[in-house]
Every structure is written in C-alpha cells, then in structure tokens.
Length: 202
Length: 202
Image 1 (cartoon, rainbow over the protein chains, first blue to last red):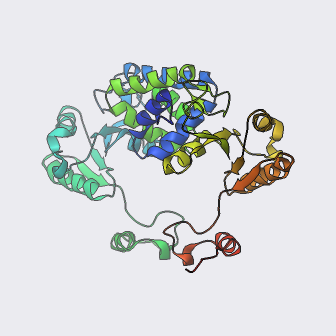
Image 2 (tube, each protein chain N blue to C red):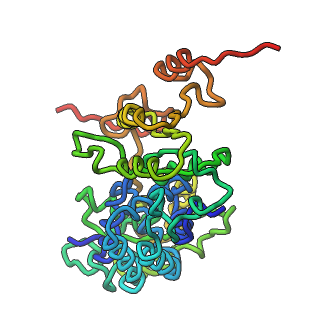
Image 3 (cartoon, each protein chain N blue to C red):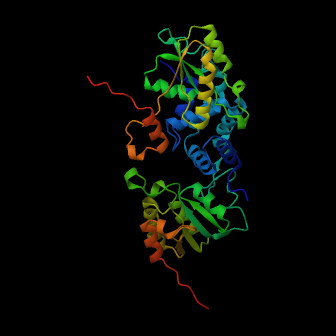
C-alpha cells in the first residue's frame, strides 16, 4: 500500500540523508515544501544545483569561497602573520561573527580520529606546515573545539608546532558568559579554576 | 566583509525559510551538502524541481497523491463509509502507519484559527458536508490534534455534524502507551480519569 506519493517519498529520502534530520522531520519539511508555492521549491532546487559549481576552496586557508584566494586571505587589512586554525568552515564563520579576530585562518577540514581512519594526512596539516615555512608567521591560534577529538587534534598540533619558530596559543576555556556557576558542568568549572586569571588591583 | 560565499549564503537563506530550521541549522546543513559530492545536491535539486508537478490533490479526500482519486480512495478494500477527518497529510501518514484504520480520510488542510483569519471556508469543511450528502457515510471519526486549535476544530465539527444522520466519534485521549503516570501532564491525566474505561470481569 503506497500512502506516500513516490515523488514525495523521494524528497523525504533525500532529506533524511542530511545530518540531524530523521524521517519525521524530513516528512514535515517535504510536506511544508509541497504546501508552499512551486516557485519556492524551484528556487531551492536552483541554488542546490549551482552550489558546487560556484564554490571552490581557497588554496591558502582552505575556506569555501567563490574566489581563490578567498576574501579574507586577499584582504590587505588582515594580519596574515596571525593564523587561526579551525576544524571546519562553520567555525571560521562563528569566529568572524565575533568581529574581534583580525588575522587569517587555516581550515583543517576535520579532526584527528584514528578510529575512523582519520590521521594527520587526511587533514590540511601538511599544508599548515608549508604555510608557516613559506610565509612569515608570528602566531598560530589553535581554535579546535573543546571536544575529545578537538582536544586531541590541538595536542598533536601543539606538539608538532614546537619545531617552528612561532608562538602557539589556544582559545581560553572557562565559564560561558552569562552562565550561572551552579549550572556549569564540573569539567568546565575545573578548567575555569585551573585557568584562573589574576586581577591587577590599581 | 563577505565571509559566506554568495552561493552558500543563498542556500542558507532558502533553508532558513523551512519550518524549525534556524540560521545555525541552515548553515550546518548547507556546509554538509557542500562537503558531500555534487551529485547528491543535484539529486535533491531534481527531486525538489519535480515535486509540485508530480503531485496533485485527491479530489475526494484532499490527500496529496500522484493520482486522482488517490490510492486509498480508489482501494476497494477500504470501507468508504467510515471517514477519518484529519488536519494535515502528515496526520494521515501517522494513522496509516498504525495499520488499524480500514476506512478512508478527509483532510481539512488546517485548523480553525480565527486570529489568523482561518474560518470554516478556508478549510475543506464544505467538501466534507458534500461528501456526506453525496455518498453513504456511516461514521465520521474526528482525528484532529489534541491542541487548542485542534480541539476547537473538533468541537465545531461535532456541533455541525449533528444535522447529518451519521455517527460521530473522536480519537480517545489518555495516558500514552509506555508512559509512567508520574510523568504525564495534569491535563492528560485529568482526561484519562474522566474517560476511564470499565473493565468487565468475567
């Protein structure tokens, strides 16, 4: 008994392949798209169809971009001696939104995960070393996530980068802004205590 | 400063228009699609582009279908004298999945919501009356959601259907299967007590 029309079922199956979208959500989205005017579905279809053709990777920082080098790498106002190493393009966007970072980026496109067969060769790590050798670099800010694989990747990089004459830094860990201390998890709180900062009284 | 390439930004904007998808989720999905092979994005684009052209509404029950009448309405094994009234096509799919309902459906395509300007004329309610008049109907099972607008729509229908010689029933409300009573909300528990069922001891 076919209760979902095949054309709808195909769309549901496509959407179910996206991360974090189960069959229920996919069905809800597909029915929503069907109820909206056809022009909206066609617009989304068009943007999906042109996505890969329009976007390449920046050959310097490996960000997704329509130009190579990307707009950040080619911006003369950015300090290219300060390189922020992130896991994914989404991390770059999150940092850019803060508006406080004036350096450039290097995107690893993943984290070390030996269980999944992802070693240093699968990430843009050799390219990071090449970059440090080829252009003047003062500081590498490691901004991997504070997850187990993110921390492992950071440790590996911190260890390897010792052989280069660059300053290596990491994002600070601690209590998130606006969080009540009693709701902070014990690992975060422990890290915040260990990394406590001195206050200079005048 | 353009940090998101325009082609990616267009896709993020499209996805943000879908229900329950905010900018963060849309960005995550768009980056995922970009990292996957272009063929997958093209497949999704194709299925979106053909969706509206392939699917129409069944002229009898108003379900989405590739045929008119739909596969349920044209199935001789279904009892067309028992009509289950639901809000949306997704509700039909949920009921079909149970496998216990052997009647046919009538999809209202919404709920009464005077605040949003949705009265009986905006829903397929007149079509329901026409159906009852034109074909032999023994029972109308009202299966709107147990939400405020769903209940209001059910009350309206129960009142209006009194003028037709049909039995009118509603889905039972009560404790969900597998739920611990102490976690049931007070309204559900109150309804379960009011609708308590007699047990016949042999």
